[in-house]
Amino acid sequence: MADFHERLRGLLLEENARIDGIYHCPHHPEGEVERYRRACDCRRPGSGLFDRARDEMGIDLGRSFLLADSEAALRSAVAAGVQPILVRAGTIDEAVNLALSRNTPSEATTR
Ligand SMILES: [Zn+2]
Image 1: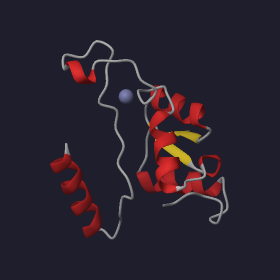
Image 2: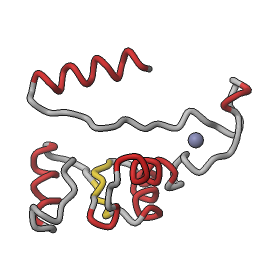
Image 3: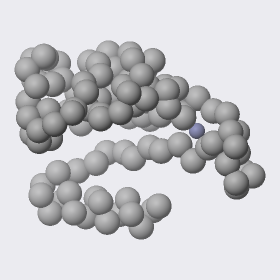
Image 4: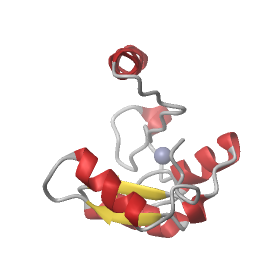
């Protein structure tokens, strides 16, 4: 997973974009790996990953949005107090522009 994250960061840097944090849930209540086999609040639709990012990076979740293509991800956003935006089609640029049009640039979390 770490190799994938570093590769992703490298590719984005080539496009002058950066990622401040990557969060994922390794848990599953019926997982095969015992140390990760448990219920948790970071698995969708829980808000644990958003809560961690908020605590570690000082993010104002009430002024943030999530672009996602799955209902479970959107439910996580709602649980965390983040504005959910469903992306069904189009480009990421169109989705970001829609999100920003709902907030003034100074109010949108663009970290
Ligand atoms: Zn988890």
